[in-house]
Amino acid sequence: MQIQLTEIALTKVQSFIDDQGLGQNAGLRVAVLPGGCSGFQYGLNIEEAPEDEDEVLNLSQGIRIFVDPFSVQYLEGIEIDYATSMMGSGFTFNNPAASGGCGCGSSFTA
Image 1: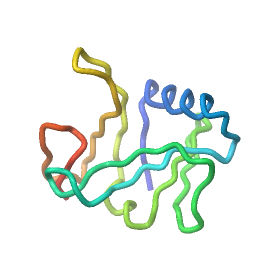
Image 2: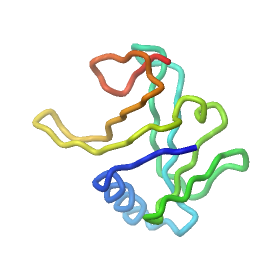
Image 3: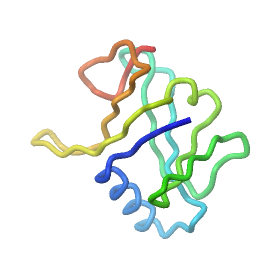
Image 4: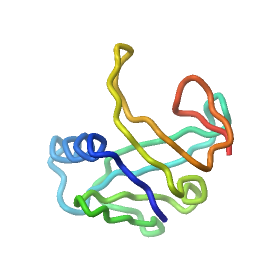
């Protein structure tokens, strides 16, 4: 499985992990959840360690990504970025597996 984070996204994730004082087992959980206006929505969370059934990606920058078995099928090749605009800031998703989406930017159809 391949998930990419841009440099700014990596910096933000590392900052969140550092701010929470978590150890080297910590990482970013990337999940796909039923819901949102297009059928699925993304979920991101900093966690202390992966669950037993998770796929764990160790990015070269030292960031760990945790993905549950359900979400794996929807996240192959996704790029996660962190954007700042006049409307606010947050993570954005470029998912080649998405066949549609909506204006909120965090909901998609597969």
